[in-house]
Image (cartoon, rainbow, N blue to C red; front, side, top):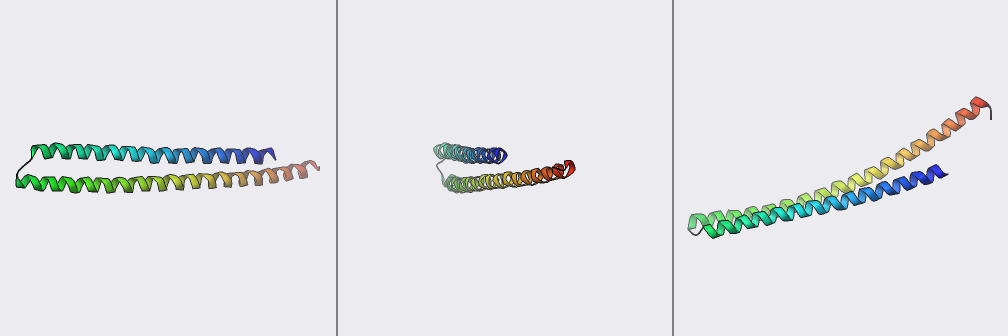
Length: 120
C-alpha cells in the first residue's frame, strides 16, 4: 500500500517537474525570440539611419520582410517548444505509470513465488 502511495507521490513529483520544465522552456524560448527580434529591429534602425537612396530603400523593405519572417519563426519555435515539452510531460507520466504497473506486477509475482517456494 505504501509502495503505491510512494509511486503516486513520485508520479506527481515527476509531473510537477515536467510542468516546470515546460513552463521554463516556453519562457526561455519566448525571451530568446524577443531578444532576437529586438536585435533585428535595432539593426534595421541602424541601416535606415545610414540609407537614403532608392536602391537602399529596397534593402529597407527586405529588412522589414526579414523582421516579419523572424517574428513568424519565433512564434513557430515557441509553439513547437511548448508542444514538445507538453508531449514530454505526457510521456513521462505514462512512463512512470507503466513503471508502477510493472513494479506492482513484479511484486505480486515475487510474493506468489516465495509463498509457493516456502509453502506459506
